[in-house]
Length: 146
Image 1 (spheres, one colour):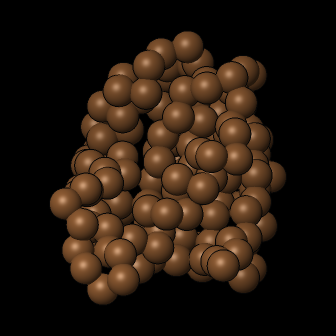
Image 2 (cartoon, rainbow, N blue to C red):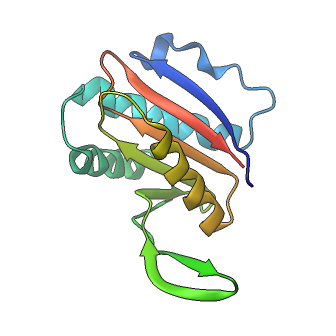
């Protein structure tokens, strides 16, 4: 059984968010950069759009900020040492080591976190950022650490 550490941040304004007291957070600077892009998209777009819209906006913001990212990379699934035909696609992998999964829901559900944790396991990564643009007011960000 894999246990993850999940921390929730909700912030409606990037400049007033107190989440940046990060003494022991893995990938501190990279997380800060990604969250800055997320807050910029939210400040510009607000809530109420589909995930695909936020994904496109976030890709543009990542590019504008020089954040290395891959959009919807395929992750392979293994079962007892065998590769399965089924593939999974997180919304983004940033800096080659951080999964960014986008939602546009009234609130995040446990299965959203479970999905992100599965992406981390499949990609052999340690950090996932589960971003919910549908939460009003403010964008939700859950840090999921394996």
